Length: 170
Image 1 (cartoon, one colour):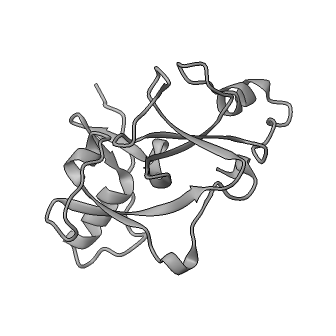
Image 2: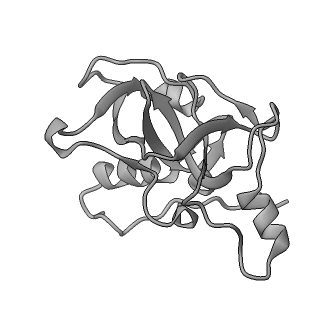
């Protein structure tokens, strides 16, 4: 979200961490369903805070560019005065990234490339669109695959594995 200059959301320090527990299998389908904290099959997500004054955050889904409800994960789009006006001498990238509009005609927005969902006015970022791997119909986050591998084998440590897609070879 560097194109937004400094910050999109903030939280009050004295309120502590803003954590929600969700069902991991639902998150793979880009849905947010609650899970009891510490439940097997659950995962905890930490909130990023509320949008700063003068900024609007929208969660938008897929090629249809449809605004999504609170229980769905989509791309985080941002609008406001602190969003950059464009890329130096790159009109195409400016239009694609900074001039996005929803299917409802709302915009222009900055397409951040981040995935997330809103909850009671707060933003939760779940990962990056480019870091999502589609495996056997499941949307998996590369960092989750990496964490699973590190946990499964004692010889592996943080930074020793990387999950990346490999194109099919015919």
